[in-house]
Length: 65
Image: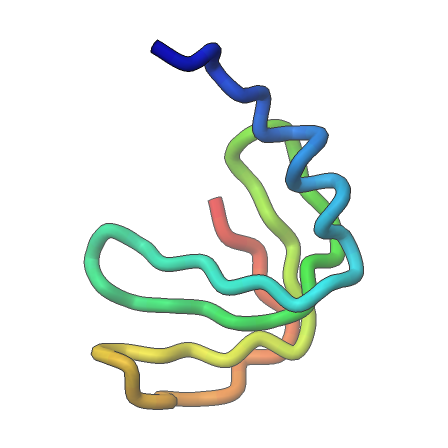
């Protein structure tokens, strides 16, 4: 059994890099990670929304909780 991983240092290393977040309902958000708030919030820039793999729109700044 592996030890639990603290996600905060991992997410902090991704700041300023392009990341993709996939929600349980199937939507995906691709954009540059601006900051991480605790364990539940991610601020993104130049964000694009994808549903079922198809680009649905350019959202710009987004906060995902």
